[in-house]
Image (cartoon, rainbow, N blue to C red; front, top):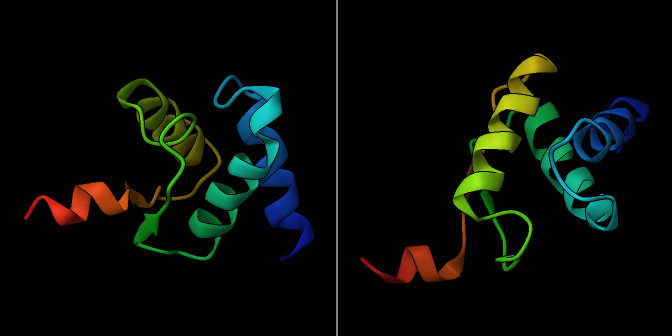
Length: 80
């Protein structure tokens, strides 16, 4: 993890994306986006995978100059 990752994570929860209590979640997303990960698999169905949050996360990543990862839960992948 780099300082840039930490700054992006901080921006993710301070910039109107995730709630302040989801700071670790914001950092998780920031690291994935900053390192060009195409996909992010998470069990976090409360803060990360809701439709509203996904839109906010994508917007914040793009405003920071990163392409957001496609976020999935194991449940999403087991539907196929």
